Image 1: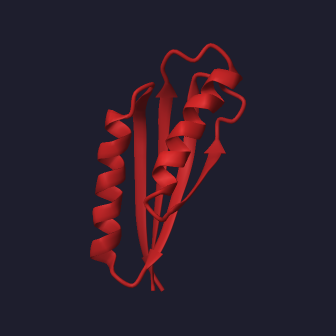
Image 2 (image 1 turned 90 degrees about the vertical axis):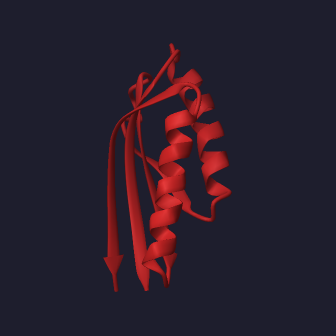
Length: 94
């Protein structure tokens, strides 16, 4: 079993309130969850200009997890309304 963990911190561009931030995050999370991964906001919940999300997936193939992480990085870098500040990835073999 292989577990992939992905933590992304980004700046929310154009949000002037927590409500606007949540709208952008909801759209982002809905689109990413279609990739058969689990996603949640894990930090910066009280900041309207920043967000940190955690994404996790399980597979029996680390190459597959790497390819999904690459697709997510590309997707996030092109997503309107956010600017990536930091990405951390980890693959755990159990």
